[in-house]
Amino acid sequence: MQLTNHTASELLERLNSGSISAVEVADEVINKIGETGNLGAIAAFDPNAYRVQAEASDRRRAREEAGCLDGIPLVLKDNINTADLPTTGGTGALVGMIPAKDAPAAAALRREGAILAAKAVMHELAFGITSNNSVTGPARNPYKPSMIPGGSSGGTAAAVSARQFPAGLGTDTGGSVRIPSALCGLIGFRPSVGRYDGEGVIPISNTRDTIGLIARSMADIRLLDGVMANRSASESKSRDVRSLRIGVPRTRLWENLEPGVEKLADDFMTRLAVEGVTFVEADFSEIWELNDNTGFPVALFEVMRNLPAYLEDAGYGVSFDDLLAGVGSPDVKGILSSQKGDEAMPEAAYRAAIEQHRPKMQQIYKDYFKNNRLDAVIFPTTPLTARPIGHDETVELNGNQEPTFPVFIRNTDVGSNIGAPGISLPMGLTSGLPAGIELEGLPDGDDSLLIVAASVSRYLNDIPPPTL
View 1 (cartoon, rainbow, N blue to C red):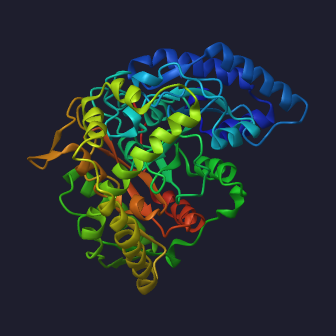
View 2 (cartoon, rainbow, N blue to C red; view 1 turned 120 degrees about the vertical axis):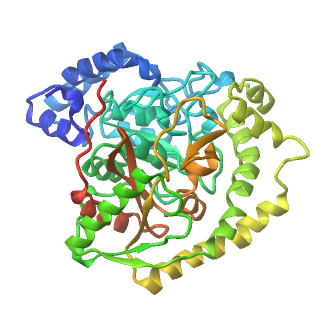
View 3 (cartoon, rainbow, N blue to C red; view 1 turned 30 degrees about the vertical axis):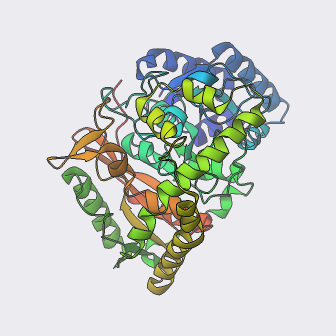
């Protein structure tokens, strides 16, 4: 079995036993990236620097000084600061820019011996879900390279799915970790906002942004979360599924699904019901109008404050106007350009979202969990599987053309707006493409959600790796 087929936890077991070395892992990763370069997943990678770091890891292990992630290679989305590789946000004005220091989240991983070996292609400035980036070229879905991998963390998902790396980091504002994980057959964890240190990340919204995890096993999610959240992975145990109560809010979240996605979701829930999970059919339909008045007002108003502040702090000498001039993707340029003119998001709409709509949403969600005595809610991560690269404006769903961005974020948006944790699990393949099912918890209920996810993930069908 090739080492690149191993999960991070499996690699650690072999590294700690001495049956493999970090250098051997590095050599296989380097080869794998070379073999699968057509996927366009990698934005920056220095194989020589990686091998030097692997040699240092082997020396630490020989001295019995290895950290809990020592020698494990990870890929980071290209908006998370690293002091040894460029952090560009996939945009033209920041090409080649190397921050002065790691983001705190990256530094936490390095302290435990992880090797941050590469940066991944992303939707430009994280403003989209296709990862069809006009500056870098598109990232591609390993299951069918003519299809999108999702986004905006599409390169990270493609790299992990293609076995270039065992796991990686993305960021999630409206679904950007969970969506590509679903479309690429992976586990994607968006924590509650604030669980991980979010400094040193090219931002959209301080209210909605969070770093997230992409991996192929729950063990890896729990391992990385333990480091990132500075808590023991052993705190996330498992439960008897017969004790679980999971809400099924049908309005919007279960409507107009691609037939194959719907069948996979129904089959998974049937297996869980047979094992004793209690499903509670209950809606929170009053949340939707509030949600529609929250997401874009928050994201568009905050990006015009957060992004210029990042540029100033970085000291690159790049202004917001310089940044805008270097944007190559028409969809991203259109969004950001609109916020400099008469179409800019009014402060009144933002204040209403932050001070009225969002708190009401959070209370509705809290009451929904309390009144129904729920451990989580469940729904398909996306209502459809991957669509062809280039369908940036509309995609086909059940015979109709739907707007690409809204249809893909439809199910992930509420949790993003209220700061809740969500985890997308791979259900299987339909017509050769992966689909995901999401479990979502209450804000700051991450540990409980991870326990639920670990408990039900045992009943997932194995998903075959992509044929590359």
